[in-house]
Length: 338
Image 1 (tube, rainbow, N blue to C red):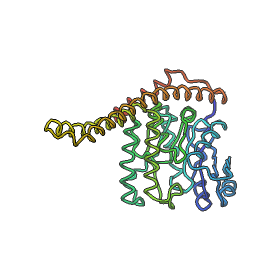
Image 2 (image 1 turned 90 degrees about the horizontal axis):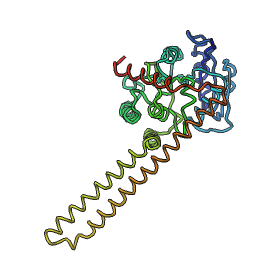
Image 3 (image 1 turned 60 degrees about the vertical axis):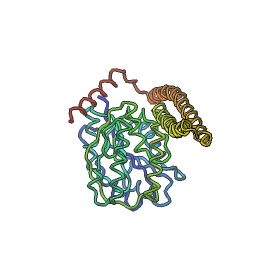
Image 4 (image 1 turned 135 degrees about the horizontal axis):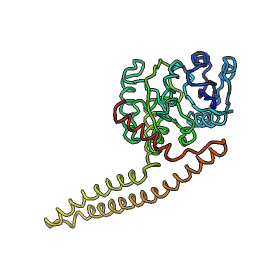
């Protein structure tokens, strides 16, 4: 039997104060796994992050000369882990937010063949080091992502997550901001079995990803809209077009009222607005149709990319029935509440 290798990747930006404790907390022996290795991704740090990673026994260090952003660091880490032969990849933060002792529970659904992606649930509503506003945003933001992705993940912004090799091969992170929301939406749209497990979370320093809560909300919302529109363009543009057409009927009704009461001549601008909104609405729907055709081509390109990755890494392509069986089992467990 081929040994199972787990690689724990840690994207870092100036984490010299916390990285040593983070690395010391990581398990080096896990039941069901033969090899456990650590990859530190130094995303253009200006401190001793890379030096501390070497001192504390990181197996691999991937260094960028300048800061590329969390999403790109995560994407580069996945690619490196695949090339290093990882069967399971765990992503965690370098700020000691997550407990390394939870990794065995995090990867168990993958080891048991129940999921290809597992997200650590911090239960943000109970975290006292989160402000009330942040807890509310986490709650409603996660609900939006669950609704759009068709998944049941309660903590969609958690960076503590595990991926099977197949999931890492299939996911394509295109965002420059963060990977957390995008990978969940992609997993749902690509029908990858995804689940969650409870994990512990500890207070950390202020996020380096954003400078204010408003900036985080704005960038997260744009990421959600962009990724959902990428996978469901017809729905997005049809809804927008429908709203414009509906809005166009309001001044139209107003014009008809004045027209039949004999004073329509002075309200011709309402008729012009109606025509304009209806035309723009239909054009928006047509854009959705074109975008849907482009999305079909994108699906073919992603499938080709997946196959090229498999060929490059010497992978055996999974049979269709294997993918469908795993997805069906995940759906059945979700329905039974297990």
